[in-house]
Length: 462
Image 1 (spheres, rainbow, N blue to C red):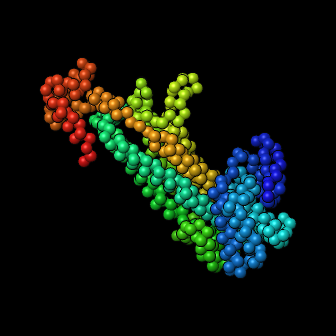
Image 2: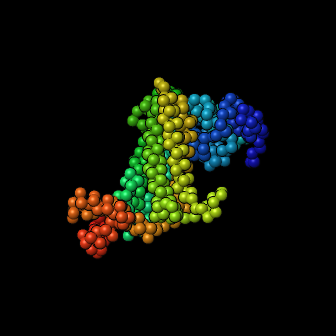
Image 3: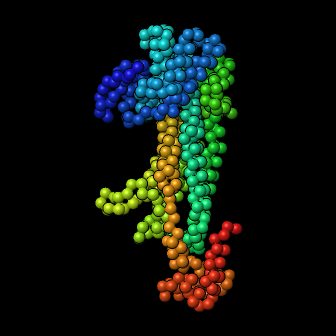
C-alpha cells in the first residue's frame, strides 16, 4: 500500500514520518525523544533485523513455542521487512536509546502490526500478536542488535566491498602490464631517485590491495560467530534449550552463510569485537588508497608545470574560472571518502569504549558508521576504477625525459667508477645543466649503448 505522511516539527525543523504507521508507542516515543540527525540505519541492517525475526518465528513454530497461525503471520511480515517493503516504517534516528532498544522495538512493532493485518485483525491487538511476547520471543536488543551488525556487515562486505577490491586489483594488474615498458625516474623524499618501471609502481599498488583484501576476507570469519540466543546478558534466559541451534540453522538457510555459535557468548555480548576489527581493516585500506591517490595526483600534475607522467580521463573538464583545466576528480573523490572512513573508524573506536559490564550500549552508531564505510568505500572504488584508472594513460616521452634529467642516474655508475667520482659527476652535471647521460658519453666513461643497457639492468626485477 502507498505510505501517507504527516509532518512533525522538532528541533531539526519539519520531519516527514508515516501517518499510517505500523510501528507502535515505543517507536513513537523514540521518534519524539531523539530527533537528532535525520539519519536512519540502512537497508542492510533492517534486512538483517527481518532475517532474525523470521528465523526466530520459524524456530518457535518448529519447537511448538508459538501458535501456527501467529508464527506464520510473523514470518510473512518479517519476510516483507527482509524484502524492503516497510523500510519507510523504520523511523528511529541512529542516535537513539543505548544498545538499540528503540531500533529493536521498531522492528518488533512493525512486524507485529503487519502480522495482525495478515491475520485479518486490527493493529495494536496485543492480545493476539504482541511485539514483545511473540515477535521478540526468546530475544533481546542485546543479542539481536550485535547479531544484525554481524549479518549486515558480512553481507555488505561479500556483496559490495569484495567485488570492488577484486576489480581494483585486476585493473591495477592490467595497468602494470600495459606500463611495463615505461621506464621513468623513481623518487624518494620527493627527490630524484634511480629509474623504475611505471608498471612496477602499479604492481606495487596491486599487491598492496591484494594483501589488505586477503586480510579483510580472513577477518570476515569472525563475523560468522553470532551470539543470538544469548538474550539479555548471554545466559539465554527464557529460551528453549534447542532454540540457538535451530535459529542458527534457519539463518544459514535464509542467507547461505554458515553462522555459528561464538566460542564464548558472554564475550560476544560484552564487545562487538568483530565489527571493531573490520573497521580497523577498512581504516588500513583507506590509508593505502590515500597514498595511491596522492601518488597518482602527483604523477598526473601539470600538464605543463607538473610531472605529467600520466593522464587521467577528462571526467569533469573545466574549473569554475580556468577554461580547459582538467582536475583528477576521481582521485580527489577517493581521498575524501577515505578520510570519512578513517573518521568513522575513530567514532567506532570511541563507541567501543561504551562496552560496560554485560553489553555495549553504543551499537547503533557502530552499525551506522561501519555500514556507511563499507558502502561509500565500495562505491568510490568502483567509480575510481571505471572513470579513473581504466582510462589512465602514460606519457612515455615525458617519463623518459624526466628520467634522463634525473641526477640520481649517476648511481648506475657506482660499480664502474665508485661513489666519490660519481658524486663529482652529479655535481658537474648540475653545474653545467647537462644530463648524466650527456656527461658520461661526452667524457667517454660509457657509450650510449652501454648507458641504455645500464638502465635496462637497473630496472629489471631481481
